[in-house]
Length: 85
Image (cartoon, rainbow, N blue to C red; front, side, top):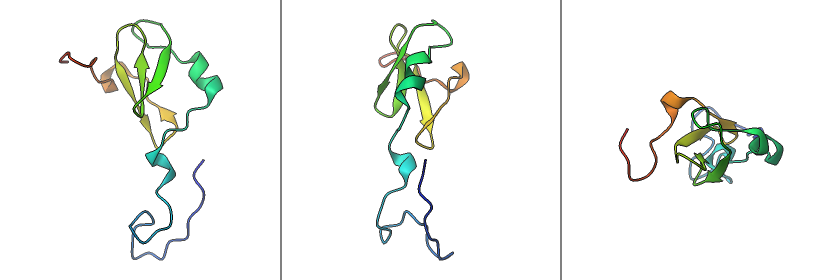
């Protein structure tokens, strides 16, 4: 979960003057959640790679939003590397 940050209303809290980058810039998927997630197409496990969840069978890449919210919708998935949608 993101820590609360003070905001003066004039600049973005993640601007260069802010001491820390926003927490949603790095994925934090709970290990227990990752263990039960599966590709909605293949029904096989996914693995965490490059800020995305990647199907171990078909290679579809599912986005992770706000650092910890997996979007397991086929419409939102990127095609496997080397293939076009």
